[in-house]
Image 1 (cartoon, rainbow, N blue to C red):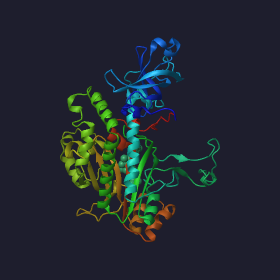
Image 2: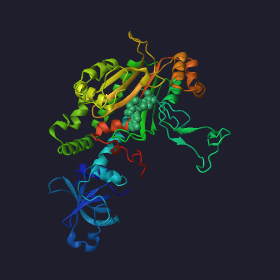
Image 3: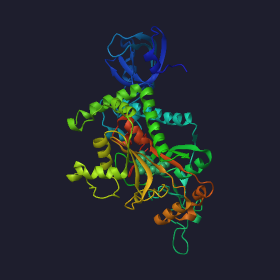
Image 4: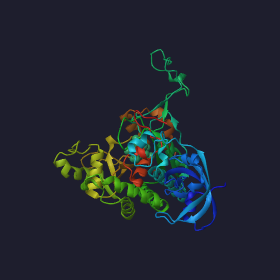
Length: 481
Ligand code: 4AD
Ligand code: MG
């Protein structure tokens, strides 16, 4: 390779050295100063052209977005804002960029606009920083589990089961929609389909993860999951990435400890390895918040917020206690919640979760022991309480500004209890025989959770819309690129 990455040169002290740089033009000032970025750093390197001895036609092609090759000498910069620059000996245009047509001009663009040109937004500082942090977090997840001897398990993307039983699935088929085979009763005949049965994209790798954990001990998945929920919010994607550890012989306490350790570990990793990017995102957020009234601005800046999470234990609270807090809360008393909390059993909406985390406890909260009726069939059932209310060993981790970051539970290991619950919610046991075998042969306590990767990236980057932390978001009415 003949060129040096800009990140390296910006750190270099080797003044007088002959260097070659390749990158894209950010700005070109006074027919002389080219700011070049190659993606390696948020910072550009300045290349100074001897414009009097350079052809006018060539200089005209130095436009924002063009790819260039610059050969010259690394010198100490006299200008403000940079330590080093390149005195150009030879300038080559590798790829032109028509200034009339290139949509990313050197000015501030709104995130909404950038979302429409998501194929080009990687070239902005904000998205450079976001995707570097995303990368660091993904790496940190693997490192965390690898250090703890967990096995990374690839669970299927195409499956015949709906792990969460919520029915929010994308079907997978090779049927010709103009002539779908039907049986004598007129129902779709999936026996004729590619897999000989109805299939869908996975909503979670948990059930397959449980099978592996009940042999290998500790496993985790980290892959794409798909939900056809029609939630057009800043927290939901139709395609998102989830990390799902599953551990044999873990109970709920162990599960909570692991989740809290994981979150703190990856946040610390990002702070340590992406200091520049997070500093940049902190400034971006402060700038964005200037347009908001004082009382809507965050109390802590991004870096302080992340350090605050590292420094404090997550608050562990039962659903029943949380309901009491919510019942007595001001927004409930004053009927400011959209969904008022008046009795035990109510599902918590994001307004309630955010009240608990942002107003009441002011730190991450782990809510446990939810009513059985509002949680998935596989969760371990507690003994009914004094009032005969049924709860399950669920845990949701709620984060400020995000709401639910993690959903998990201890699993029901008792075959009869699990079968009874499946029947109640209408899951046919014969379709789940493979899953039930773990309870038939050597069943044991086990637990796991799912961490929504984009929600984690949202939190660590301080971005406010989940569409801005995944390269190409899929949401209702949107599968562009
Ligand atoms: O709470 P959920 O639905 O839990 C499960 O899928 C379990 N099977 C996990 C397990 O125990 N192994 O989803 C887990 C997490 C949520 O807490 C949230 O962070 C994220 O996945 N999530 C979404 N993220 C983005 N867009 C969506 N539509 C999401 N739905 C869930
Ligand atoms: Mg959940």
